[in-house]
Length: 398
Ligand code: FEO
Image (cartoon, rainbow, N blue to C red; front, side, top):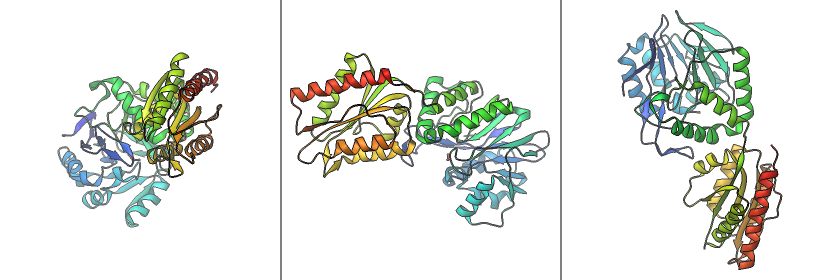
């Protein structure tokens, strides 16, 4: 790639990672980007860096614009290593006058790289740093999604450099939202929200509220992953407002794993009950659906109907993985139910129910357990569970 001018004298200088397929548990079938931005002003400023193996791409892009040693300030909006992995090498190269970060960012940089000698400057929330023709102010966005996270805002350009927020894991040769299919872009944005930010939804609302209260004008949002929002920034802001309220629709997910298709037969019968009541649903067999794609569906689903056979006195491993991941992301406003087959002990349904309740999912109906293979009567009971869950979905108040 080459650098891309995103505003006059402001450049994307990041890197594309076409091949990454797993991002700490999140599937990235279309890769990702590590975005960094260079502002050429009286004080030349680099906002963020890239993952360590991509340092040469960053340096190559910067050199197309300016000698890296002319960079005065390095802003570290977020210390997670996909953005800071090459910070030590970049500081050795550019020898910046200032390394600007949040107070928590300084601690995190010290704890990652053990370099007390770097020229740290703490950016207090609301503080402004003059770059020459432009100023940059800093928004504290602690726990969105790390304690150190902050955003940088350049009012003269109405440009928000938003760190991870509003990003997407999607490697493309295009750099802007209006160069790709908007629906696909928003789907990538939704997956990113569901898998990275869902558990911080309350904080997302606070940040959106603060931005509105401060009257910050935004023409462009430049996140650290994926496409830059230059034509549709309001669409992703509205989507974050919607997602952070965890609003659901009349949609059920039947998420299951199965040993010998008994639990799967139960899942199909439950689906039949949902069909009878006219509720939309998705059947998600964990052998064929990645946990992070399931979480994207969880974002707007109202019901989580979870099934697993019992194996070795517990649920199947893929379901344990799924529920551990889901619980960490704290979905809210859901109703749920459990089901599954067993041979002799049959603990899985009880364990699933307990986890649903720990997640504060309302469980209006007792789970259904079936020994070995479901009989016609068992399948009738499963369909009845589907009908009852459909009614619970319709009655559920958020
Ligand atoms: Fe893209 Fe939290 O790092």
